[in-house]
Image (cartoon, rainbow, N blue to C red; front, top):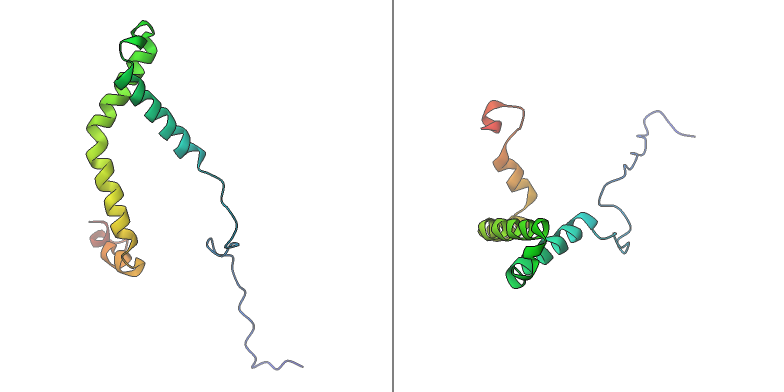
Length: 108
């Protein structure tokens, strides 16, 4: 018989990270599709720019991809580097630096 002084068992809530550890996640289709299209567009403009001039839409798209990647590569490389560095910093330290989001000093 349970007495009234017994504490109830806490209900375990499902955590986003408490899944099966060996369960394989499906590939990120948006990431891989975009990566393939951007790489193909860059390579087409870099290696076959003269050949694709007869297809004006393809030539315009390939040139736009090459110009975009040429102007963004430094930011992409720095972003990947700093996300890797941030992965090594404890989460509690990062959230303490960010502050509370619902106060003015936390937003600024």
